[in-house]
Length: 411
Ligand code: G
Ligand code: G
Ligand code: MN
Image (cartoon, rainbow, N blue to C red; front, top):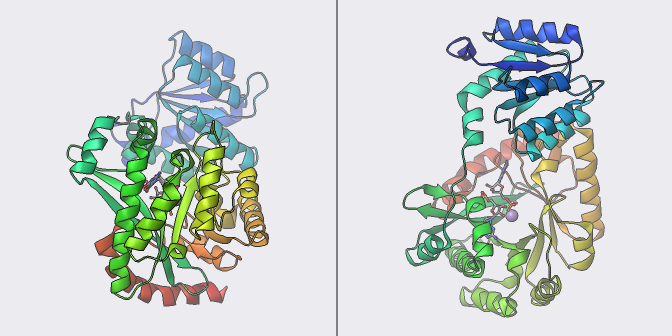
């Protein structure tokens, strides 16, 4: 409905070698209020028209399977042209090819609104078009704000960093087992800033060590308060592999736990490797010594980035966190399910505990209930929250938990 008003002037280009598909999509777009459509029967033609300025487009629908230039090549040419509009991929190919093409386009940082299977379902088309104008397009192109190291250094002094906590629950019993600590920056100008906007900068500017120590100390202090209130929780803290460079880190962690009267075996360090490391010996040494001190080590975002089988071989991890991209939606996607289940089997054979991240809906939860996975974490269970909100969540969860376990057992 929203799409009928105000957006009639949006310029759209369709690229498909199949004339019938072109006409059909043209008509479908017209029906929901988008008449300004140029149809091209080849990628080369479309790219030439855009390049020469014969046509402009704010949205391109591109077919994947085309004889002279396929859709993936079109994507590459769009990037070369500096195309800044939105893209929808359309194809009769199977879901996996479509999904891969989607990731390729995303990888080029194009604003991909979605993928459509042919023949295009008018309801799906409408959903994509409405999504475009509500939020998606504009937000996706917004530049990320850069923060200066000096600002972050001040944030420590001004006490602007605050820990959020996200529950991890036992899939069998629903019991709250622990929390993952996720730091936020309460920035005086920007409001609450998420870590993906300042962790990399902290690593590059040498502030990461101070950040890790700050996060860990306050998490342990918070854990002490929960313990005093009768809740013994396992505390997980994120540590990037690149920051494991200071040799006294294991001793420091041990001392911090001791001071907070927190058992080291109830402390978990979630390790991620965001880029390939130059010197891998020091982190390896530090990780091994952390394990010798009985501190738990978790391999985070398993299956993505640089978290690899080689790391499983080389580092004595105690927990495997399967990346959310293999969890959410796994019940409907055979490839995801295969990867997810193989990861679980591998972890079990290595004697590791397993955590599924990204449990976003009831479907994900029910699916997990039938898998041999130990813990679940995700928006469906709880979003990351400040410490003071955990009590309330625990009460709510007690009520929800019974229902959820019942639901899972029925099917
Ligand atoms: O909710 P979320 O946006 O908090 O976290 C985004 C990313 O930031 C995650 O990959 C998480 O592992 C990372 N992260 C969160 N807190 C910390 C931290 O204290 N240290 C490090 N190194 N990474 C963190
Ligand atoms: O990389 P790491 O696993 O530490 O990342 C934690 C990040 O995942 C945080 O940014 C957190 O906010 C986010 N997160 C937690 N639960 C969910 C979820 O169910 N879905 C999605 N998409 N993100 C989640
Ligand atoms: Mn994590």
